[in-house]
Amino acid sequence: MPVETTTVDVAVVGAGPCGLAAAIAAQRAGLSAVVFDRGCLVNGIASYPTYMSFFSTAERIAIGGVPFIVATEKPTRRDALAYYRGVADLYGIDVRQYERVERLRPVRVDPRPGQPEPERAARWLLRSEKRSGVVCETAAHAVVIATGYFGRPNLLGVPGESLPHVRHGYTEGHSAWREPVVIVGGANSAVDAALDMHRAGARVTIVHLAASIDANVKPWVRPEIEARLRDGSIAACFESRVVAIEPDAVVVEGPAGTHRLPATQVYTMTGYLPETGLLEQVGVPIDRDSGIPAHDPITMATPLPGIYLAGVIASGNHANRIFIENGRDHGDAIVAHLQRATLR
Image (cartoon, rainbow, N blue to C red; front, side, top):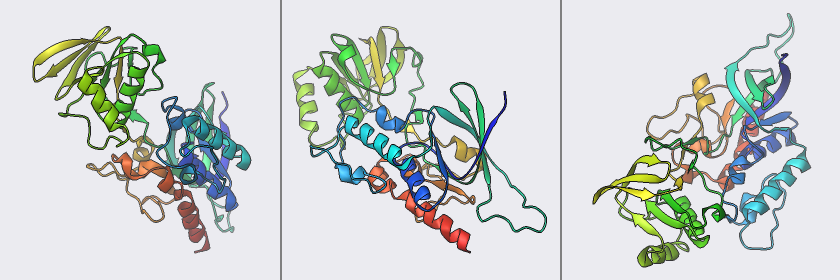
């Protein structure tokens, strides 16, 4: 099967809001850009709970200078999906959905004898694969890694975790009506899922390593989850950990010893690890403790010429440091750095 080839100025890996904003910044500067994603457009947002509302107001997650207008104070997941589709259409961004970038390597295209090197010669080669199995190679002057924070689930590492009724994300609770459900975790995502499934009629038990739900649970949500825990309508096993998952139960070890909780659905809401595979391939240093890839926070440039970061990937293991509202400007910083490098 022949390999499809493309050459662009900027290749962006990750079609989330920050990746889209980087592509828009490139296009505004007269640079050609393509965006790859192994899933759909803004795949991370598409994976959010169905009825989720954002913490931020609409104007703070707008990109590309396009107003994000909603009738309510906070935009919903559905509002955001429609908005980002519209922005991508407005700018005509070349988004390669469901095309996973498998490899990244340096490449040098030598100029013809007697000719100067082009201003934006290709420096990197991305090898990607479409759902159909077609392999593509894209040569790019610069590559922006904007792979977000939903690349690799933070696994429990226990037997049974790969069973089909175990999920590492949450959408909505209708399918859990009258079902025994175990939620592992005690942060915002776990609490939101527990409350939503409780309202849908599920029999919910939270299993959490700490002695209570986390201190950073949203203040407008905390009273409700604490009330449900007090009255027993949502059960909890604190200071406990899951040691095995069975087809119809979860084995839990806690202060009272080891016991089994009935569970036909299990949600491990234990967070994610950033997807740094491509950065590791090309040798971008990654701090062992923080998980932060080496980069200049002003220009978002890594030590490797032409490799940049955009969005939450730059925060390493601390996803709460970079959001859409402070990651959407990374594209402008990247393009400004590229333009300065061209002028030198």
